[in-house]
Length: 386
Image 1: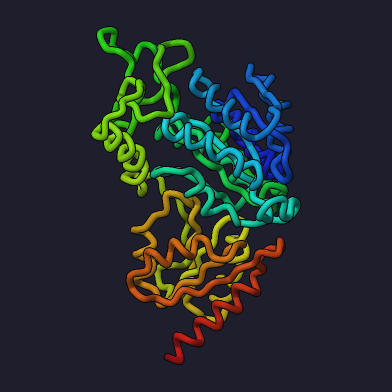
Image 2 (image 1 turned 30 degrees about the vertical axis):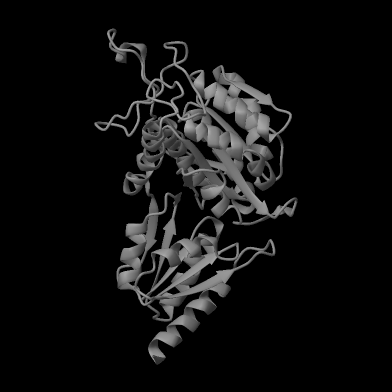
């Protein structure tokens, strides 16, 4: 039977990770994500898991990759400066198709920036931080309950698509405390498990990199100690051994792209509020979506036909959904705590010439409902005048 709980965003993330089957955490303390590590240090020993504080974020990312390849679901947590240091290792995890979860609790940047203030300045880095052609999955909740829910989803996506998954928060959400109903669904979640020894046919070798179209875009990893396979950051064939031919390179790189891109609509999670008749669509995510919801409700009271689109799956971005919203609306307002990073992606999709207005802050303060409401009012006046 479920219960009402009261917890912090970072705490919810850690507790949900344990529920999702995470049994290894490696990390290095950094504001504003440190509480994730603190809770994991307390909870993992209770379930037979391991916590280790590494010497830096480079080692932390390498450690969770190693743990995952050894058969254990793994996670780390960091913020902007640490996330920057992890990029090479995440590229390796992408090439080796190693499932793992990275929590990025965003703070103001660049560099040391604003350690105790919220930001959404990592959005494009999350997508493009590694070199080479590749995809990544990133989920960005906006409430503490969603943090709990989508941390579990992050682990399932990591296993199903054999990829690093970034669970994104900002300082406000990470340190926010809220009550929510911890339902039986959360207490006993469906989780994607590793392949068991019995699932490998005796006459076949275990090919961890073979493409499997029927149920998964990739073969799931095997349980710890159940099979041996080769792992390399070099271009490799389905056995994992390096192959230098151009034809194999073409196949591998396109596979790393298509195994996520072709499943975008399956991966995409989003919420909509009053978009059916909306002539203005506000796009907001994370903590800013909370302000946007309030602004939309206030605008509706003034009879302005506006709705909210809240992407939870930030990457891969649902191009088809955004095109539908652009097609049926008169204007889009993108509110984000950066200088317009997701707005760049929306502009790329905007083949209809629709007006895109921006509401941005980079000073470490949250965007208020009034700021968004003022933009809604201004855009609506422009629409009715012209």
